[in-house]
Amino acid sequence: MRRVVLAGASGYGRGYLRQLAELERAGRVELAGVCEIAELDAEGRELVGDRPVRADLPALLAETRPDVGIVATPIPTHDRLARAVLDAGAHLLLEKPPVPALAQWQALRKTVRDRGLVCQLGFQSLGSEAVARLAALVRDGELGHLRGIGVRGAWSRTDAYYRRAAWAGRRTLDGQPVVDGALTNPFAHAVATALAVDGSTGVEDVVSCELELWRCRDIEADDTSCLRLRTRHGTVIVVAVTLCAVEEAEPVVVVHGSRGRAELAYTEDLLTVDGVTTRFPRISPLENLLSHLDDPAVPLRSALDDAGAFMRVLEAVRLAPEPARIPGRFVRREGEWVGLPGIEAVLAQAAERLATFRELGAPWAGWLP
Ligand SMILES: NC(=O)c1ccc[n+]([C@@H]2O[C@H](COP(=O)([O-])OP(=O)(O)OC[C@H]3O[C@@H](n4cnc5c(N)ncnc54)[C@H](O)[C@@H]3O)[C@@H](O)[C@H]2O)c1
Image 1: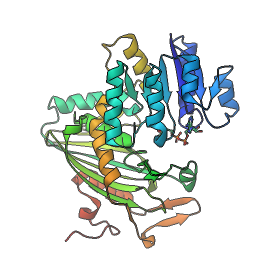
Image 2: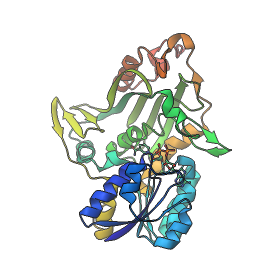
Image 3: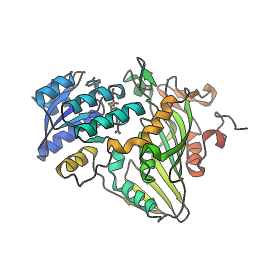
Image 4: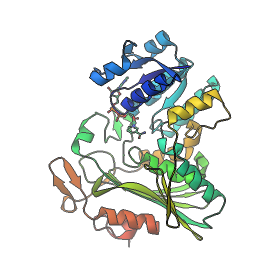
């Protein structure tokens, strides 16, 4: 039975706390303690029970000596807390995006390797059999020659999303990188999944990278963005997303092949190939990590090592000029809600034609000469 410590238990980490309780009932893990700087609510207190709750992760790790540490805290704390887990000799499950700079990722990888430990990332879409199936179809040429991969994603966030934490919507905080933009955080799975489908996960697998970063809100980071990259396989990947949707829809990865077309709704494990839709099972990052630790022949679905191409994209976003403000006349605000009317059609076209917002002539993006 693996002893597990969780850092960050009230935001997204609450899901881990619930999952740990289930895995504990199944006899697979033992929750050794929780690191949290805020007061736990009633559910949190009940799930944690009499296990220690500390604000200081190194102290908690020294006290509990766990086998696995989960880090589900704000992005700017990832590097420090991940290193604390590794320094304590524990395997690591680190939420996505792993760290907010390419050099930090490279250094963290080296530390994991030097210590002989394992690091899994929280890209839960990569645990879906639908992704594995689509990647196999692409790899085996079942869809013919690839014209490209397009992703459209239209979600809506209210002002409360950006108010909930100091790092939300920031490119930097106190001089440190955060890179909390649409492409690198809420739609990080869209980027990582498209790259995985193409079999392009290494740093060198991204040959070129173009970005159009926009924002409707008065925030630092992008909320409406288009990425176009070319992989070493020659595949063009376009990821077009917004957090200012008028009509929300789950994101879809579209694979354009000369012999077939596939659509993957990665949040729902749904894969449609030439019009036939199948739902696939998935394994969570935590369960996959536990299985890998039990039997190293079981591959990690979302290893730190396999985030190289994603980190190339994150680095490009980190170093890109500030997102351009979409003029207010194109944006609708109702109370806490902000929408960009017409954006859904632009995203759909970007994913179909593998074109950018400017090339498509989005009214707020201006025309290319
Ligand atoms: N995989 C996904 O689908 C998914 C979804 C949402 C968020 N996330 C990731 O989860 C992480 C947390 O996101 P969030 O939205 O919950 O952030 P948040 O800021 O809302 O909350 C994080 C939690 O960590 C606690 N915390 C902050 N600093 C801490 C510290 N130094 N030590 C211990 N606890 C600390 C906070 O009190 C809070 O309970 C981020 O990396 C985010 O990108 C992943």
